[in-house]
Length: 69
Image (cartoon, rainbow, N blue to C red):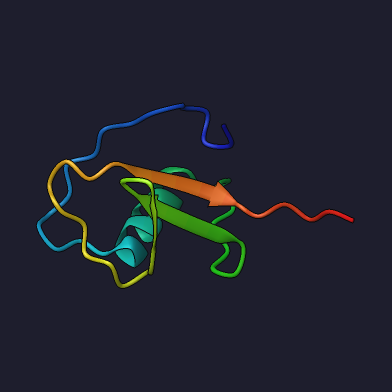
């Protein structure tokens, strides 16, 4: 829980994209690392592209890739 919350409901405008949501989250949680190459968004349990337009009641999960070896 890098943002300090497990869940948050957001009221976004119709057609808001995942990329725009990323910007909203960056503004709300400035310490949250949302690097494009390391952050993945899942919409209703399916990986989404950053140009994916969100629909009402979509459930979004944000995942960070971890380095390993």
